[in-house]
Image (tube, rainbow, N blue to C red; front, side, top):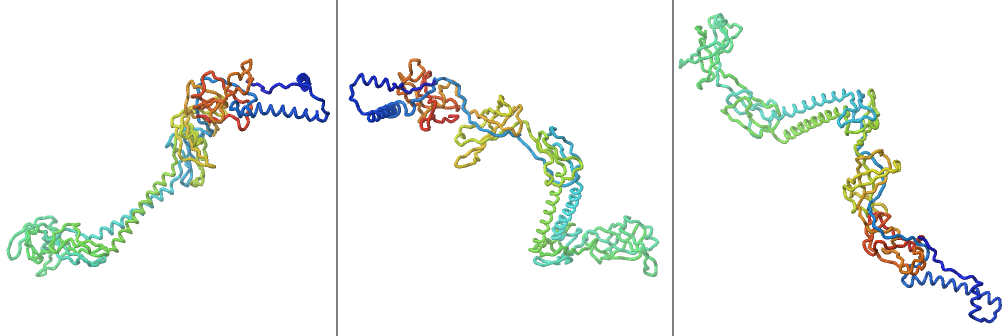
Length: 547
């Protein structure tokens, strides 16, 4: 509703006639009359300025400068939707540029642009011959490094090669030894070997394992034995007869020693002479590595079995060598693992499920690792994602799960529903003002495509049946202009008396940017006025969306 409040003015002629009727003025010179006329006009203008401009401002009535046109509106109840708005570009929920990490010839690339692929699906297989050779070499290097370590570790504990009795320990704690140094002498006397001559013709009839009877010289005690071996060559015995040496094994009852003399009978055939016993075995264990004797585990007379540790070698030099070999073995193991892992790079699998947007490789191409660029581009279009910046003033209004209305200039008239997923507190500050990135997800996006620019309104609150007025009607200081009694003319629409326009303080609630909620100060049906032309000092206060 508009009105013009300028007062009507009389014509100069009518004014002169009126003055003649009221007063009888003396005649004055024309020059003086001219200046009088000018003075009257100036006085009238000054009076108008005072009445319509200065006086209302001084009296506390209508604000200065509001004697022009007004737009009126009625206080009504409306449903207000409070939102936080922004813009951004929609992108896939996930995207991936597939790159090669190996070098070689492409053997197959069984996928096409526009095709749907699943995570783990084969995209590209390359010739891995070089990688397989590297793996074989790495395995051999690991075996060698591990063998070197194991050999040294085992050689640091010289052991008995067979069971027996320790006859003598040849080193003591603190001794320094080198490879070949004698450590201990061990003999096996649990069984004894008797070597006796038999006539060659008789010996040729014997067989290994055949039973024998042994008679000890002096005591004439007899023991059971077994033929262990028969010599294949003849010797000249006593009286020039030909004999062959036969070895007979006898279990030692405990009294047999080297040098004990005895005779033997095999079957019904007696030997051609006597012989002496010897140990079943006799060994001298020697060191296989250099080091200091740190422990001696046996002593003379100790009964040992095959594999029994005799002494332990150590010292700073030995420990250092052992550590070096351990490191070498570990490095070889890491190298093998790395070459095995590299073999996987010759088979390129889809890292995500999605749509093939680009295919840049085919069978027969030569691939030079990552330098070859992208082999394919995949988009997961199961959902779209929008990221937009939120003002620090609106940050506390947002919560995950809030509904978002999304529109795009490319799809006029269509509104898409999204959901606020999160707002990151990792803000960005520019010129003292901070914004925060908000992430919005769209499950149903119709004709929206990645890369489209969109506008988004995050629904913060919906106020039903709110008492509201246009936001432009709110003046600075949360005040509004209302027509007082007598302000309207006879038509009930035009402001006839601007002095009757009053300021009223109100309490504001939320705002959707167009309308603002009034929680106190006005009633439903009240009329508020908005200056149609507002100067810099009397303009409507800006009411941000969302309150």
